[in-house]
Structures are given as structure tokens and as C-alpha cells.
Length: 271
Ligand SMILES: NC(=O)c1ccc[n+]([C@@H]2O[C@H](COP(=O)([O-])OP(=O)(O)OC[C@H]3O[C@@H](n4cnc5c(N)ncnc54)[C@H](OP(=O)(O)O)[C@@H]3O)[C@@H](O)[C@H]2O)c1
Image (cartoon, rainbow, N blue to C red; front, side):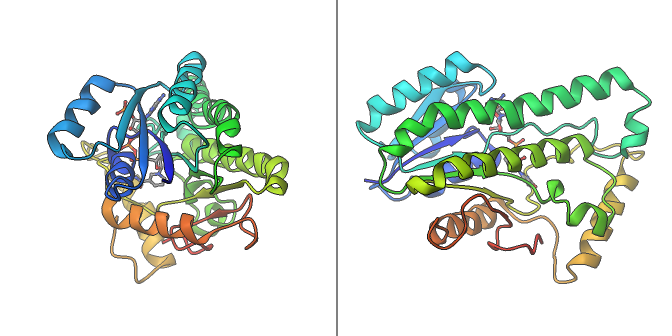
């Protein structure tokens, strides 16, 4: 009976992970969300037959809520946890369309937004990993996956000259480093820590972009098309999650994947 914990399971990629993983009735799937009432309602309306889904309340920035979620997870699965998928993430609109020098014209906002990104995407995931490692240690599969972004790749930023999404990229690079450090500590006991980018996925991030914001976005998309001429634009959550799950299932400490940061193809091709 494989068991999964997925954070940010309310919508977007997290909901799709919940949907795909719970389609196998042998899997026990625990979704961590900020609004349990709303997600319980969505599950009962859209997935009424899935008694293998459990929804727990936890804002990942709330350490006590994560502690409760870990205790509740232990009670539900009654043993070790096999997979932890750290999917919840903060994505800002403040940095989505302008380069970092323009963001700097509002220093207070820049600082507040960056601290928020670091709190959600880095610090909270470090707490999440520390609180769930004891359950992973008792599991059979022992895989901890952070859903990261190619935006945080030091190979890709200079190569594609991506000017936008600076604060988000900085936080994802921090997350990748945290994952590598956890891996350095735990790989020798067989726990796979890994960061995976799902590709560019349509989860509504750019809905409502103003005409002034569009050029920054278009410039990034143009560099993506030059980098990957086969690329057809943002993928669906369905295909991105299928790809990421395939990478998760193929990867292992024994294969040399511990602590790595890869794309949804399982390599350094990001689109
Ligand atoms: N979409 C892409 O193109 C793309 C590309 C690369 C990487 N990613 C990464 O993939 C992950 C999912 O992205 P997405 O596009 O599905 O994002 P999304 O649609 O914006 O969903 C974000 C999810 O994270 C949850 N969340 C945010 N802050 C939280 C907090 N403090 N505590 C608990 N949950 C929190 C949200 O919960 P609420 O419903 O409560 O707000 C929501 O479930 C993120 O880590 C993102 O950085 C996405």
C-alpha cells in the first residue's frame, strides 16, 4: 500500500498529483492544503469514490500546522511514508514581468516579496522535510521530491538571459540547495531527495496580465522557443504530472539521482 503526501493539493499541479496518484486504489494519498473545507468539497464532488484520499489542513508556513499534519499522517498510514511531494509554492506577480533592476525601484516591495518567497519556497519546505523525514525513514520507497523550477537553474538564466521572475528564481535555487543538503545527509540511508521542474505548465499564472506586462512575458517565451524549437507552449497539468511521476518512479539513490535537480524529462533539457 504505497503512501503519498502532497502539499498544495488544492489546485494546479498539486490537485493533478492528487488526482493521478489516487487513481490507483492501492495508494493512500494525503493532500495538505490551506483550505480543507473547500478541498474536501472539491474531492467529494469530483472524486466521490476515492476513499483513499485524505485532506489535512496546513499552511506550510505554519510550523505547528506541519507538526500536526505529520502526526495525523502517521495516524492515517499507520506506518512509514513512501513519497513526500513538496509541491506547494509561492509565485508572485510582482516579479513576473519586469527585470530585477526595475523591481528595485520599489525596494520595500522587493524586500517583502523576496522574504515571502524565501519563507514559503525555502524555509517552510525545510521544516516540512525535517518533520516528515522520520516517517520517510520508516517507509519502503523513501522518496522526497521538491517541485522546483528551471527558472532557478544557473545554466539556463545566463544562457537564455531570462530577465523576469527573479525573486521566484532565487527562491527555487535556494530550494534546490536545501534539497541537495538533505540528500547529503540522508542518501546514505537510502532516502532519495530530488528537485524536479514540471516544465512550463498552464495553471493560470499569467491570467489578467495587463498590456504593459505582456512584452516581458513575450520576451521570455521567445527565448524558450529559441532554446527548444520543438516546444509548443505551456503544457497541461495532466501531461506535466504524468511526466514528473515517471521521473520520480524511475529515479533512485542507486541510479545516482540523489540530490539532483532535473526537468520533467529527468535530465537538463528544461522544455
Ligand atoms: N505552473 C508552472 O509552469 C510551474 C513551472 C515550474 C514550477 N512550478 C512549481 O510547481 C508548483 C505548483 O505550481 P502551480 O502552477 O500548480 O501553482 P498554483 O496553481 O499557484 O498553486 C500553488 C499551490 O500551492 C499552495 N500554496 C501556496 N502557498 C502555500 C502555503 N503557504 N501553504 C500551503 N500551500 C500553499 C496553493 O494553495 P492555495 O490554493 O491555498 O492558494 C496551491 O495549492 C509550485 O511549487 C511552482 O513553483 C510550476
